Picture (spheres, rainbow, N blue to C red):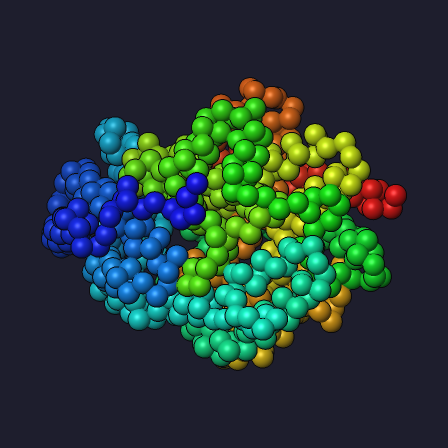
Length: 585
């Protein structure tokens, strides 16, 4: 089985005829779009249709080009061809920012927009997109200003993001006399040997000292840029701008966070119980957060992971099992960590070839199987939307984690339902609670940390030591007495790429949203059985053409009601109670 993904369905190289022809056609189409936007027609029905068709063609061309360059760079951040291609594409897109601003303003001032949508099936396909353009028009700046912001971002936000990615993927940790990349040393947190975990934690913390100052400039500069842009657009705080871009109401976020804060002590109980099982009292040591327990300490090959996933998903959704078979057979997945490869995991949906590509840093733990289930959930979500029109392929941040987290829930609950041995059940429960605690305690700590960084960005600069202090305070708040307060992870801001984007702030709460929303959906699946699957597919398909709240209504869920979030958290509380009972035996 492959170790690396196959990118040839996209392109076989940057210098190939196909890549160069697509790039040439993109440049020509971009020029046509710029010329169109410079002389928008008085006939708004025809003008909006022409603008959308030009944008469609640009999207069809730019996405495979961007994905190829980005995927090449993800596995080798020193790939000069990929970095140069990305920079060139970003420059080309920035050259269209003035045209985009002009077109959005054009749509925004169309008084009879609803009538035009009703009269033209093509515009009807883009009804949601056009309405959001109209609603967001008030935050769009003059096209020359938009163009300047986009161009400046190339050497600003985008450059700072690339710096963090490069430094974190190339820094080396000194572990027991050998050099390991950051992903490899972080994977040792799952090792069954406590001495390995402790030494790996020490090596990880020490290696951040080499890059902390440079990365602190990345983080500060990005957040200051976002803050400045929010002020210019008069669109409120970065969080308010994120919620608007997410098509999510503040009342939904407030209800979810209120419920999570109520239930955080539940997860702290789990952490203290795990510490006791590991042989000490009080809060858990940071390096033991991912310590495997019970009989779930086995290691798995990629072939084992494939069989496990397909066996567990075939009863739920046969089409998902078939997609997973394709993912392994057709080399959609890049599995193993190595120098120059970015850390963590992600999935890139590529509608143009009706496939996805998944990056992991597979090390053979059960957690890696859960990670694969998560990322292949994104791939399934991509499959549900791949037949939408080209401009209806982007789902917002909160629902982005729904299918992925639902997959985690399916695979873990299926395994728990099958387990009869106490030690095996304890290990499975612990593995699930590891992940759940991450999307509750850790995600909340990230949310509070990012909030504090944005607050600091209003008035000054936070050097590395201050950022470490802010991170520790956020972790204390999120983990409470569940963690040993003297063994936290002050450098979590260095290695998490989610903080480093000028166009995507607060990429933290969507994980909590996805976990709790998926739990509620899974409860419906358990109740309805096979009848739930068509509803689930339709819900995923709607995520790109409806607000978060309207998507939830398809499953009869009111996201503004704190009771829904409590009901989902009660599912996790039951798992914690189950763990505590087994731990006490």
